[in-house]
Amino acid sequence: MSPANLKLNAFPVFLRVEGEAVAIVGNGGEALAKARLLSQSSAVLRIIADDAEAELRDFIATTGAVHVDAAYDAVHLEGAAMAFAASGDESLDRRVVEDARRLGIPVNAVDRPELCDFFTPALVNRAPVAIAIGTEGAGPVLAQMLRVRIDRMLSPSLGRLAALAASFRAAAERLPKGNRRRRFWSDFFAGAPAKAIEAGAFAEARDAAIDLLASDKPAEGRIALVGAGPGAEDLLTLRAHRLLMEADAIVYDALVPEAIVAMGRRDAERLPVGKRKGCHSKSQEEINALLIELGRSGKRVVRLKSGDPLVFGRAGEEMAALRDAGIAYEVVPGVTAAFAAAADFELPLTLRGVSSSMVFTTGHDLKGNSLPDWAKLAISGATVAVYMGRSVAAEVAGRLIEAGLSPDTAVAVVENASLGTRRRFHGTLADLPSLEGRADLTGPVMTIIGDAVAGANFERSEPLAARKCEETAPVAEGVQQ
Ligand code: SAH
Image 1 (cartoon, rainbow, N blue to C red):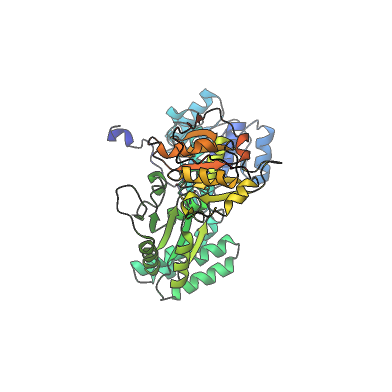
Image 2 (cartoon, helix red, strand yellow):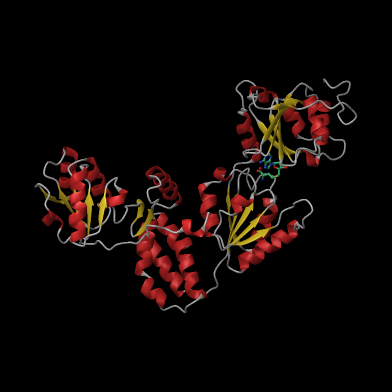
């Protein structure tokens, strides 16, 4: 696309309308739609309708808009700050447009972009904050979709927070320019005042803001251990997204896709710390130290982990280090890989009469000869989700069969769960060792074992090939107890 195509043909501005007249010409639904939109402002609506439909009449009666109950005449536009031709009658709308232009009043004609001096946006209203979405006619449906998305992202109390901010502007101007002032505002919008407003405690919010003004202590860092989900961007929680957009620094693991990191604040520091084949990665101690350092420097940090942060994410160590260092943190859950894999397979993790418990495990702690503690649960019918299980697939299968689980137990394997690149495999416990030999699986792999797996939908999955050589899969004698 050439840069010329990236230029806006309609430039957004915010027009002052408080106490100004806005003229709307039309009797029916189109006039009513514009009147409703404009009634979100403090403009004085002047509706020129000689034969207003019932709904429009009701609107006029309940909102106190000025009703000009007469056939349209140019004189009705006089003094208006803007005008809308919304009669639905092309020749009348044209007349309104011509009259308005002659009178120097910017005009909008409903559904006739070629006659418009300006367009009305799809609006997210958190007065005094407004977000206007324009598409230059590319599509009202697109604009509405964006509106819904943005609306969901913003706290309903944003307007009240902005109003409180306006009342603190003069006081904040007296703070030294630069860091101190910026910190006041960022603590104001993300710290105690914002939290109090969110909880509906206006007076408390004001007191918290006054405290912030007086406080000379260095800003306190906050760390959020955030689950990024299994990979798909739209499986991120709204809370995770909000924190990402407020973050000063994002510390993330290798399994977190770039697209999710990119959803963070544009100027946030981005610090990859995870293992990627062939690249340097930090040790857990180094990561702990980094989080503490960032926290001490007063940063808002998002520690982004794939899936859920508390499932095989070493969050326990990070939280302990932060607690010891006296740095505040919170945890934001995410969709763990087992859930994403189950969803991809339409696999009921619990199934009435078949499985009523579930185990999250990893094949990596299969040390020595003792059976893992979860093997018993698997035998008693639990659904087992194995994280990081690819390179130890044979060991896992072997131990389970040794413990008495039938080699015919159903197994589902998903590579890259939730992503467009996902692959699904199904088979039995006896087939599981073949995973280890598959060089074609380069993404993360989730293995789910148990009778409930039989309830999955195998339509779009490939068979897990049975491994020929059996030395790594001790499907041995005496497996049944
Ligand atoms: N905290 C993460 C797990 C991290 S351990 C969570 O809750 O999901 C890393 C392991 O998670 C991988 O080896 C793999 O077994 C699993 N995993 C993570 N993302 C996955 C995905 N998109 N598809 C399949 N398995 C995944």
